[in-house]
Length: 140
Image 1: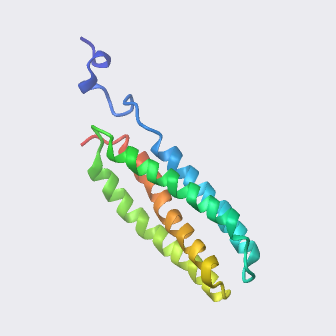
Image 2: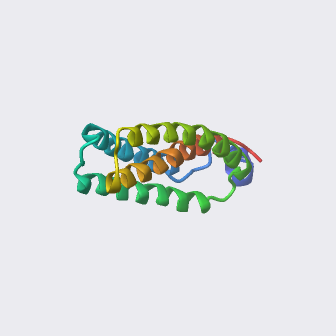
């Protein structure tokens, strides 16, 4: 029996994976669009309906990616967590600097809350994509 016929012997490259990276990248795209919308109105009050809709859609995409990620069998969770931890630290710093800019521009109330939530999605979606892409090719 060849290696290709034995599922346990197949390389990590051949294993089918759920679209975790696509979903987390989709969430990132939605919060970037929402962030640009919110920034274009700063410090004035932005139209919150569109921004809230984009945020909710981004949360749903990232939550779907998380659910799919948890259900993957034969996946290098050690590599995923190691890469996620360090990339999340970098993106947390970036998100904090963006948050500071909005606060400095006197963004307040619901607008600031929506921007903060979008930055949380930003700080989680990019590390998820990076870590998943790295760990899917790793063998434990």
